[in-house]
Length: 213
Length: 115
Image (cartoon, rainbow over all chains, first blue to last red; front, side, top):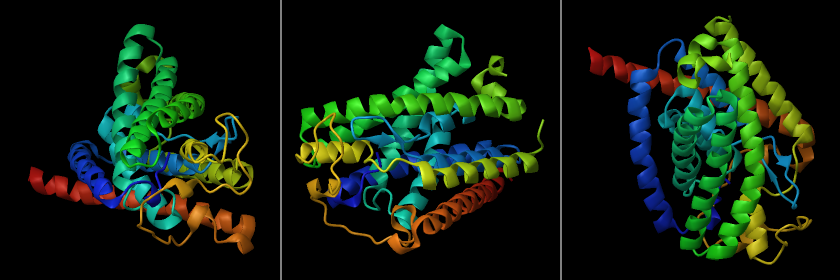
């Protein structure tokens, strides 16, 4: 759901940038307190992995494909929505400036959708669902599905405000496509969390809950 | 349990393997946002196949344009899959460097405020 430059008029794109910068400043403050010699390799591997997985589009029928976004993954593993904002912003900067994937003026909106909304929805729905199911991987999968679907609806609203999509068809199509793409998000997120809990239980057990290992 | 260096190297290798596989196996169909753009501009049905020569950006009204050095994770048509491999590996290492640089900068600032 990387919004290209053409999809949002510059004045609106600037508003999203300002909101994104506020969250980014909070994410930097989070990183200041969290980063240590154990967390830095984890953040680096998550970012490189999310970059690679985002290039891997899988077909979801309906003439459409999709890939992991990674907001829920980053937020759950790092134990904070700010982890998602921090990582997704860096990935979006490289994708936008080097690969033309997602616009420059629209990068603020993309940071809000995938980093901020994806991170908050992923983190808090994981906590809530885990309180009910007591199962880390199932909760992470469902949270990741929501963290793909809800940002896509926010994106549809932004497209409506930009005059790019009509409201109802835009919400419907974005919702249906991302409900399907979210299944990829859910499975990949649960799989990566399982692998991390096997490789480095010391790094992730406190954030994901120890029973996954 | 892996130490930090092994974890970083293994993680990086897995990312490269995924990226290389993606060059050959990734679907060329439009993503959800592009598909929606094609639909609302009448180029595609909601559940229908993607058009061969559809242009999702036709629906946009924005005026800003930016030329990236490696558009669409490639070095252009003539380089084919080799260009795609170079682009994705460069992208993965660039991501790693930017993250390490950003965490280092943040860490430096963090120590300053703590002292």
